[in-house]
Length: 272
Image (tube, rainbow, N blue to C red):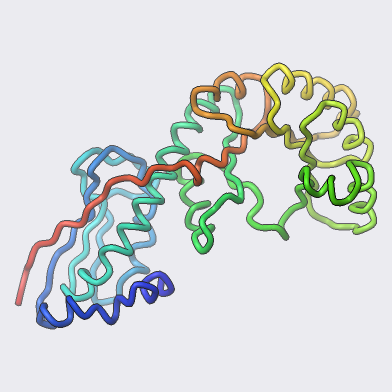
């Protein structure tokens, strides 16, 4: 939070410092202007110095209706005014992600299917955005490039194909999960030979996904192999994909296509 506040020069707000006396205290309320899943109120205590009292009214993961107060803060008017925009910007985005994720997860959970995020995150906001996905009922995919192996189409192109990539990977003796992205059913066989931990079925239609699931179950010799689908799966299409029996669906739109929730901060002066 210090980085975000310093970027906006909140401690050098020349407008507030030159117009508002240091002694003035105010109450600020964060108000929802539309229905949403709340995400971010838990971090508000880290947004202010200790002399600003923060009271969370709606904890993360709960639903706020229009005109509901998410949280309020009482303290220095200068501090509250200079941090208003940064705090609203962050909470609006996190609430937007959580709200969209909830829409996806409520459909998918009917079919025991998990909704996963991707690495299509805003630089500098990854942990916040992944947190918002979890608050909305989704699940976090790998945190970063070091936490797991995901062999994608461009890795296959650069290494010379599935077999070459997996042979090279085997030599590396890594002790992290290995997932292989495939866009054709005939790629599954080689992945199973090298005992990958999972497959990302990219841009396959529901019928192809069902066939892929059957192939993996038949040829994995009882070994648990994780299967996820990805590739432009919208809310409108989600039921068709979740009902295939796939374990998870990764959705980049949770963070790339999200609409910020409209929030506002309302102020009341309480002392000079």
